[in-house]
Image (cartoon, each protein chain N blue to C red):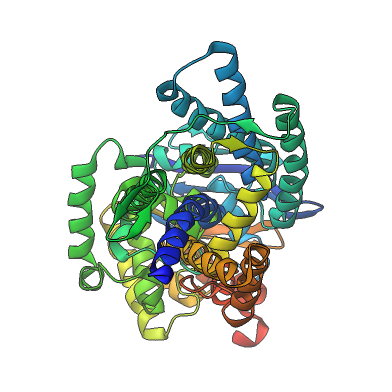
Length: 298
Length: 244
């Protein structure tokens, strides 16, 4: 019974990793770039939203769209400054480094907006319930439910609509997509906006579960999302989803067995093992093969 | 009757950073005709097509397409105006299905005329039956010849007035090359203007109407098939002395 309870807690917790990993995966899938500032953009979005909330004293119903809006906006800001100017082959490393630089900038702005170490965050206040001797946290049930829905919608959009075809065409080869008359700049910006919305939802759900936000939230998002994506599979949406759940599950079990200190150790050990055994992630395309096929570009 | 020029290029110069790849190329293509651009490796043939298609910007010179100055316009605008490029090495989208590749080719029309696009896909299937058989297969899993057909079909999906083709025979078996050239000839016979860049000069000579010879970024010859066959220049510059 204990094991079931821990597994369920872990999976529920992991669903927030999944949402963040989906955002990472979307950006990586389309642009083949890793955005290290993703977590910080989300923190900044949250910080601005909280600041607005303090000034205007708004209810939680209006607070959610404000979070999403500012998360997308700060994500778009990162895209315009770190990724749009370096969209050539040579720009892969440059854009990653500049996303690291902008990470510091965003964290600093967030720290100015939220000067205390911890800030209270509006909570949804859904009560915990019991089912067959196992306890479920209501807000975490909502979390996994939303993660499922969002993943399903994202999957449908990417694989069933014409926007998805364009998205995947750009992902296959941006230069060839340009030949078809596709505005790759616009596609990239839209991708960052959607990733911002996804991350904003994740950030809201996680923070309202914790009912507080600390300046370390950005770093936490980046690390957990990145690791979940790497475990699941680079650029694979389904991989990111399952990677997040798996990470949550393993973290819960290891920290229960060996103590809470082992939570982070577990995270990075799993990442290391996956990177050694299967560098493209458990469900991802073989990254080396993929990179080779991408060399066949204009 | 004076024939209409669909494309006019005047003194085009394009460079990659410090290296000048095109050093003043002038040529023109007649509407409904098949114009071939020949020349050895590094002559600037692909650079010329990239400049025409708006992927590269020229430093100097003018490009007039269908009576309109299109020098250094964006690729997306050029596609809408009716210019399509079939790139070298085909460059189909390997992780998209055949049908999705065709849909991507119709990118500029997807929003406005979805039903028309579906009809055109059926027309492509009728023209290239192999694409219909493989419509739900991933593009990357097809053979070179099939990918070339897909690449041509994808370019046709944007309803071009002028089709630019970059070395469609490259890396294909001789029998497949014959098939591809038959397709090109057929397309031209249906009234699509084509500018064909080709290394395989003997094949190009079979189907082309007008020929230009590029060497080291300069145009060294331009004229009809009779003229190019009469001149020994093609053998010297392109096939090599021994070929004669």
